[in-house]
Image: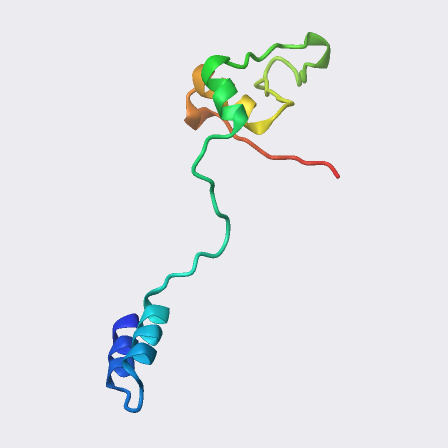
Length: 104
C-alpha cells in the first residue's frame, strides 16, 4: 500500500473528529529514521587530519617478500581513517584494496 492511497482512506473515514484525522495523517506523513544516525559535527580525528597529514613509514624487517617475480603487497597497520587518508594522497584509489581485519 502506498502513502497516497493510505492518506485518501484516512480522509474518507467517517466518525473521526478533525483532530483525530489530523493525527492519523501526521502519523502517515512522519518518516521514522532507522539505522545509523550521523551527528552533524566533525569528529576530533577529522579536525586533526585537516592540520596533520599521516605519513606511512616502511619497516624493512617486516617486509612481505614473495620472490622477485611477484608483486609486493603492503600491509598497513593503524586506524582506518588515518591509513585511508594517507593512501588517498599517495595512490590512485582504483589501485588498492582494503580489508578490515579486526581481532577480538
